[in-house]
Amino acid sequence: MHIPENYLSPQTCGVLAAAMVPVWGICIKKVKEELPRQKVAMMGAFGAFSFIGMMFNIPIPGGTTGHAVGGTLIATLLGPYAACLSVSVALLLQALIFGDGGIFSFGANCFNMAFVLPFVGYAVYSFLRKHIRSKNGDLIGAAVGSYAGINAAALCAAIEFGIQPMLFRDASGNALYCPYGLNVSIPAMMAGHLTIFGIAEVVFTVAILAFVKKTSPDLLESRILSGDVQDAGKKKKSGKALGALLGALIVATPLGLLAEGTAWGEWGVDEIAATGAGYTPKGMAEGFSLQSLIPDYAMAGLPDWFGYILSAVIGAAILIIVFRLIAGTGREAGSEA
Image (cartoon, rainbow, N blue to C red; front, side):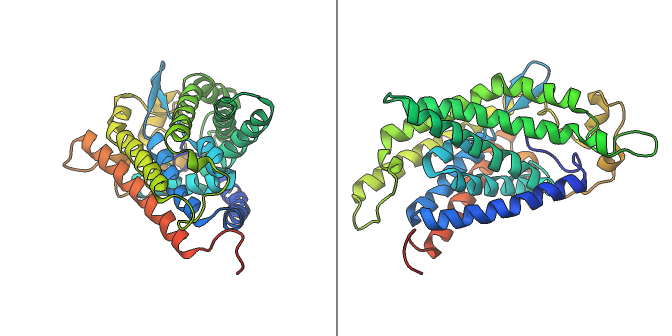
């Protein structure tokens, strides 16, 4: 679902980036008002889970792949505003350092995966959580919410792809950017997400949420108390449990290399003509290109599996450090300025 560079027109990218600016502003304001410093710091840890989850590529018949995102997971734990910011930072790191998603399409990717996904997922989760009278109502709500969220995001991406040949063509009538109309993009995107990728999102979300409920129930409290009130041993135990799970997932990330093929709509310029388009759109061939530091999570001179693990460590570490720094410079939610 990571839209690469030059698949969308500059106009489309500009509109979606502009739409995200007020969203980010509102999210920052809400997080400052509602989350205590410790939960702001946790945004980095759960953002790391999202980053790692997006590295586990899953194949489906036809040679394409997809992955979980984890936006609804973060929303159920920290709220949708925190989820939006956590996933946005994860997507920014992926685009800048690893070449996963375009720089110009960053706003579009955030709109789909950091805005639509967690807010739709959280809305469904909240509704079901209120109406399911069961001790596992939160898990059921998270399962249905995560499925709804990722499919809503996939539909948005499909529409963004599909309107390109309708709006942007050259003098010969060929598409300038993504060459697939809505009649192709919507079935292609939704087939995988309504089935395998949607199930992967559900499993990822429910498994980690259940783990948190069992090992770190204090993180599910409406407000984490400050260190001088909350039991220090409980906090330390929760941190160790989450750290162990994150470490295990990082070590397992090379499993994502087993999936052959490229996710639909994420082909390189050299591949697009062979995917059924029959030509390479001019806007894609002559568009913006940025050489990332660690393209495709691979490092020269190192085995692919080791580069994948090291990339996961780098991405997770940066997310955790960034949000801890932000938490350290902030003030408690609800305190006087």
